[in-house]
Image (spheres, rainbow, N blue to C red):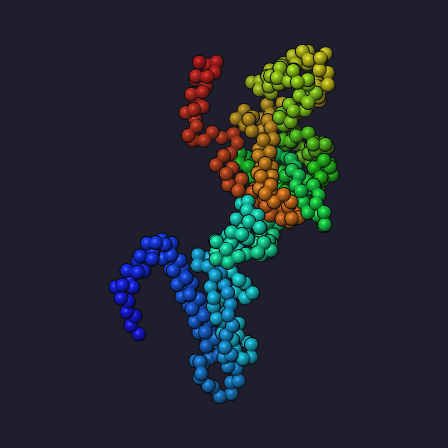
Length: 413
């Protein structure tokens, strides 16, 4: 059959396209969907022909099974949209097509894309609203949640992975709280987090585990679990942490060869909480002199000056500082290039901030498993960034600036 189109019809079509510039693309999409749907239908018909061993309308003696029409099915493909296909049937109900996945309404690559969008920060309701525009079919919030469930096995495998091949020397330890759905109520659930630093200076998240961060027994069990997974305690030389109750004692018991560095930011905050507002800036400057001294001996000398200066006016602040000063200066016992990284818990605080930022749009995390899925994704994303940013290392493009600063902005100049 020959299709003839007059010049007038062509001119009218071009005029219509000029008036509605997006129409031609919509026409192309519709045509592609129809053609792909027909292609899949024909492919399944050929599959049924092979299954029956004969062409349509062909009879075979002694063979009771025949074609029995078809039923309409909708299936969504990535980059194409929702397709309408005719799935052929046989009379005995023995045929099952392998062209389209059974009981699935869209291909696996779309499921993976929705999982990535969800993990990146888009909640299930927003994804559901966007899906019609993105793929031509509305995906319900429940479907998005069901797709994410398939990540659980991979997340658990990552959380319980073997650590024996990781040469970890430092541990950053902290906890972060989430509003989580537990049974039929909303509870504030703490999640314990440990970040390790390898002998090459690279950082990695060793473990995330729900538990009471104020409980010594929770931390002890968490550390024991890390060791059961292969973490070699004899290689751990330093633990960086804030003043969580009982944590320092448990850490020293589980990693007997390690020292403890108390986060200077937290200590500074605790001391200033006992200082009147009008004296805060002066006390802050004196504390900074202690923390940023060039050697441990000078730091202790500045501390003695601090005690002499403030012991009468601010005895509570001085006592608070005295109780933590030794663990605040532990970083001096380690390589100087690492001091800025190990004097505070900034590394793990940054991770916790990312955890909170991602879950903020959700308000309530839908259970412990969902929480682990989100945190695992964020952890792996952070590790990708950390690969190019090891602690104690100067990037290749920075030595010029380092030398420039030394020669022009220090006492050498």
